[in-house]
Figure 1 (spheres, each protein chain N blue to C red):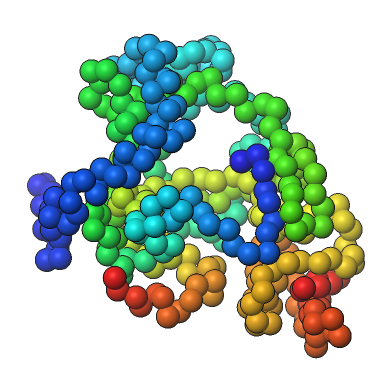
Figure 2 (figure 1 turned 45 degrees about the vertical axis):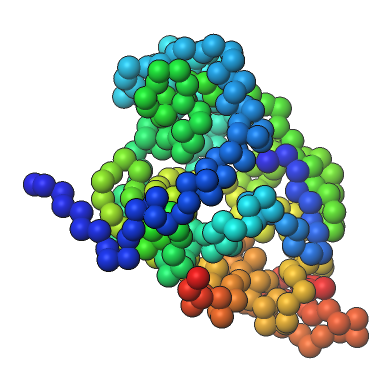
Length: 77
Length: 256
């Protein structure tokens, strides 16, 4: 990272800009929203064959949940 | 003991979930971008180094500038702030009941892009020798836009100014793999508020978004908590210009 620009409005970000049909902003944090190619309900820790249940907000809800629109969290595509 | 994986009822094969042409669209895109160009460039350089096995620990006699590097943990030379590492761990971010810390070598050599595999290599995770030696010095960051203090800063100077802490963080990729790895740094709030260099008691403008006052207060509280010092936080009615004042300890934050 070599540059930080503060803006009044949120600018478009990389993946939604080039491939908006892909998974949305909740990409790695909402196990309730399925993805056509990979399950979002479970995850495999690198270096293991273990399957773990993916937590909403990856378990960091107490830090970040209020940043999200609660109406979107129950959204099922 | 055998590891039996029972697929959940909703799982369907990838080939049924997405047309192959759509699936490859993203990959095709990658090939057209700098990421893809970098991969092609590496291939064109003819680097054939393919380790048959990774040693357990770095060879301390080997130079950090060796190319190819001798170990996944030795692809970057020590930074000018090496004396600050390892930083003490902030236990507030411990993973309670979470997965174990990912093996360091696995984390340092994992590659999610099969486009980076080259030649006859069947293991895409042999890409790590091609990253080194990665030059990370000098390293400056330019701060521009709607900020009180703009300019170009040396990232290592900022590390010394703000101090470093270690946190154990979980990461979860949309492609279903996850890792738990230590992160060392300082809270972004320190940079946004410019930390102690402004002096306590100073009045600062903190642009925390255009949301309602409760969201602004929540964000100001989080910024304050992120600074690491639990302090009393008080709020004041909006001023004539519509801004709010939040008193956190000896510091006043003006929420524009």
